[in-house]
Image 1 (tube, helix red, strand yellow):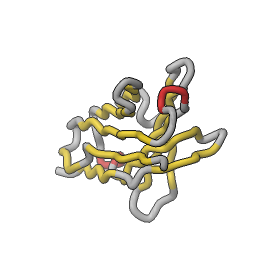
Image 2 (cartoon, helix red, strand yellow):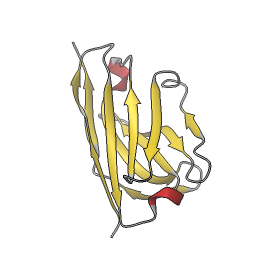
Image 3 (spheres, rainbow, N blue to C red):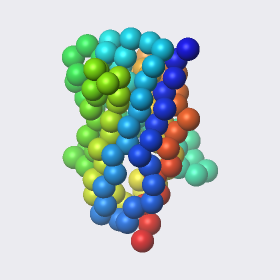
Image 4 (tube, rainbow, N blue to C red):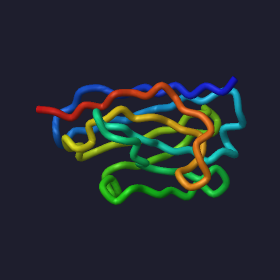
Length: 118
């Protein structure tokens, strides 16, 4: 059974930082593309970042590029999202997903809430 379990969310002030983690199990993590996707209250899903399973290449949506960093530890089967210079527009529930926005998402975690507020 595939499981993706996110952690690390919370309340942070504007300009602050958080690191999200996603513990994976039930599939060969190292060879799978992984993504972070977020959803703000009352809005649709929004792709945030992607990391390629084969090459480790990464990509980001424009609004987070330079502030967020996606990474993976294949030995620990864990995906990360380091977020810095957070602003109120980053407030959302963040989901870890197996797959990509162009090939589709096969599995999702339950999400972790990130709230940026003073």
